Length: 162
Image (cartoon, rainbow, N blue to C red; front, side):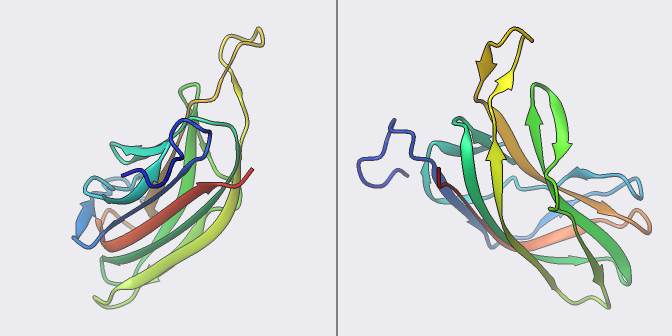
C-alpha cells in the first residue's frame, strides 16, 4: 500500500512483518541459507517490494534497515544471522551484519539490529552501463548441526535516506 503522493518520485521505503511461524530448514551445518520470509504482510510500501523473501532495491543510495526477529529452534544450538545482497547474480554478505545467537531450552530468542546499507550502481556489462536493481535478503545458518529454525514473528523496515 502506497501512502501519500510518493509514487515514482525516488522515495523508497517499506515495512513488512508477520505474526505467524515460518520454518527455515537448515540441512547443512555451517552453511548459510535464505531465511524463509514467505508470508510477510505489507504494512506500508513505496518502491521497495518484497518478492519471494527478497527486497527489491530499485534505486541507488543509502538505506536505513531495521529488523527484529523472534526465533525458536533446536535446544542448545548456535545460529548465525546476516543480511546479504544480490548484485548482478552474485550473493554478497552485507559487511558487519552477522549476529550469532544461541537457543537455550525451547524458549523464543529475539534478534534485532539497525544499520545503514549503501547500494551503488552495478556495472552489468563492464562498459559503464549500470543497473540500480539489487536485492536484499536475510540468511541464517546452524553452526552446530542441521536443526531447523522457526521465525515466530518479525518486523522489517527499510527506508532510503539519501
